[in-house]
Image 1 (cartoon, helix red, strand yellow):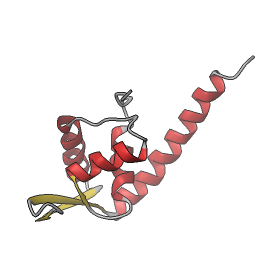
Image 2 (cartoon, helix red, strand yellow; image 1 turned 90 degrees about the vertical axis):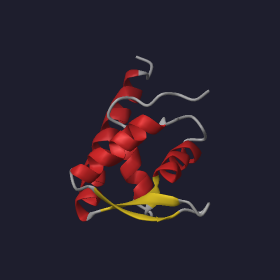
Image 3 (cartoon, rainbow, N blue to C red; image 1 turned 30 degrees about the vertical axis):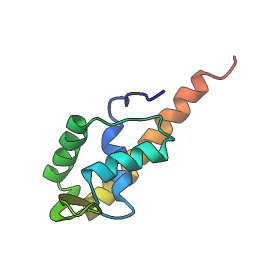
Image 4 (cartoon, rainbow, N blue to C red; image 1 turned 60 degrees about the vertical axis):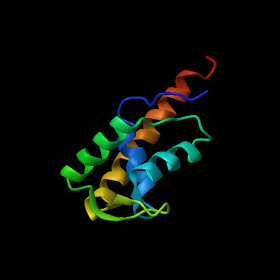
Amino acid sequence: MPMDLLQGTLDVLVLRALSGRPRHGYDVSRWIHDRTDATLRVDDAPLYKALHRLEHDGSVEAEWGVSESRRRARFYRLTAKGRRRLRSKESALRRYVTAVFKAFEPE
């Protein structure tokens, strides 16, 4: 059953999706879906808001290109700032998830 994303995780997932290579929006969404075994879903509006927010703050850059389906698409790629931000946010998210799992351990 697909789950909605917890607040604060979308940016780091988008940055992670872009860490391997430039991708267009649908490809980012598909990467998140595939990497989470279809557990997480990302709707278009929040995804594109996140991409534009990350572009505005300098974490990603975008340029027009042609997708696999031969359609015009905007491709996003990480900048040096985005790579630093990914490392920082990924580390914080891992600490958070570890703490949450500790709360579920038997007393």
